Amino acid sequence: MHQGLISIVADDGRIEDYTILMSLLKPHSIRANCAIVSDWVGQPGYMDISQICDLTSLGWEMLSHSKTHSAPLHTLSSDRLYDEIVVSKQALGDMGITTNNFCYPWGGRNFAAKRLISKHYNCAIRVGGGPNSFYYDRFAVNRCVMDNVDINNKERIDFCKKQILTLVDKPLWIVYMVHPAESLKSKDIANGISNLLEYIADCGIPIVTISEAIDIIAKRRTLNNLIDLRVLQARTNELVKDAIVAAIPKGSIRHIQQQIKHMTMMKRYK
Ligand SMILES: [Zn+2]
Image 1 (cartoon, helix red, strand yellow):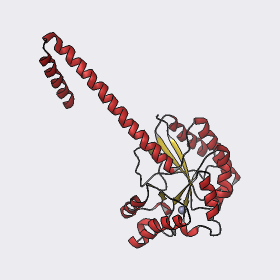
Image 2 (cartoon, helix red, strand yellow):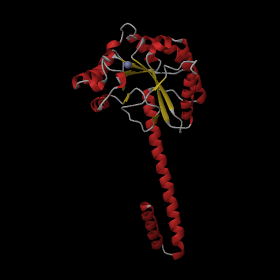
Image 3 (cartoon, rainbow, N blue to C red):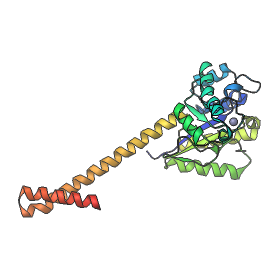
Image 4 (tube, rainbow, N blue to C red):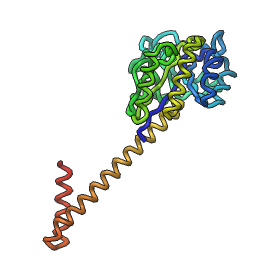
């Protein structure tokens, strides 16, 4: 009930997502998310449509990571914003790649960008920040860095493990960033990530896609609200019981009714 969640987002649609990250995650049956720049699909060093579709068929989620990745969104005119946010989604859709969430190129954003994104996507991921609470800003989701976890850097590994351990009994959502994916070519970093994945599995923390996380968090929040309602109901029942007990010595039903009314009013102003 209070357990947290983890997601992994690899930026830019690099070929290493397909050639390295997939083989790191597959043994653990983990699905990640790739943030794809629509103009870069099929370019040298980047995944092509069929590779992206292979990952999608494994249950990976694709996010839009803009059309050109040329500048942070807060520096762009409204026409350019439209291209980066809306045209990128259309272009990816034309390639058969569905995107429901966005990932800010360079992390930059402003109100205009957030507002346009909110009309076309369910959430947007930024760069930096720590774990997200379950009452997070849907259009500025924090990310923690995962691509600098060198197996020889004990301090860094210990820090990540400590953070993961908090998710055992705290409703927090860690979104890890793998960027640049080229760093995965280092065996020490790949081993560091594998080490963390094993630790996450030992702790029993689910690793889910961005869309799955949004759904799970929304359901948990609804459940929490329901539980609050049940608590309120139980308190009211207790109140009614107290009123009856207090009114009985005085005898009449009318008196009991008045007592309940009085106690409910008192409770309301407490
Ligand atoms: Zn990027």
